[in-house]
Length: 247
Image (cartoon, rainbow, N blue to C red; front, side, top):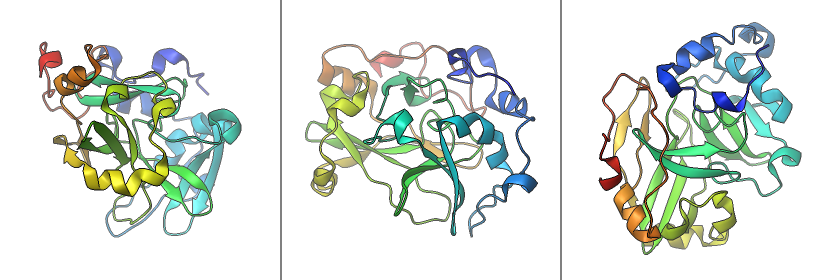
């Protein structure tokens, strides 16, 4: 099995496609040994679970949930008891494809750029794998000096996906989880904010590019942090060119 290093974080640097890199994980256990992935009215995902099984297993536990299929639950000893996806141990940075969650964990290339997160009633936050890359699979809200994000839904499934909010001025802070608004204010903040961001259509899904970087820069008083070049994930033109910071 390949040993994953921090240099694999983005899976798209230097023009290397995620599909090619994921294909190199052929040593992972096949679907016949691990069980089928979720089948719903909207989609059948086949063997996507086998792509990530061995990569993620050391950092959590694979569970099979009714109606959903195989999901991965992070180990609290690894991520902490107050773990929140797209917040804990990472930073929001802007890329040619929209806001991208840059994880501090060397395995973060998988659950924060592929698949979906949701809250299972008895398990807490869990990750449902898929093989399509995006800068982040979240929707965004904006207003009243606040910015929030919520994991996008599973295809054809109605599951709990809480909103996470911070002050706009704190969006690009390292380990943004240190600045989260208490979750008991979620409902009130949803009512005070509005949806923001354009949708980009991928191979089978859509992601949200999020708030304009110039508005975030205005709130923080500094240019937004940016990624290096990322090769096109879907063959579509990037949303931002050389002057993206001024967008």
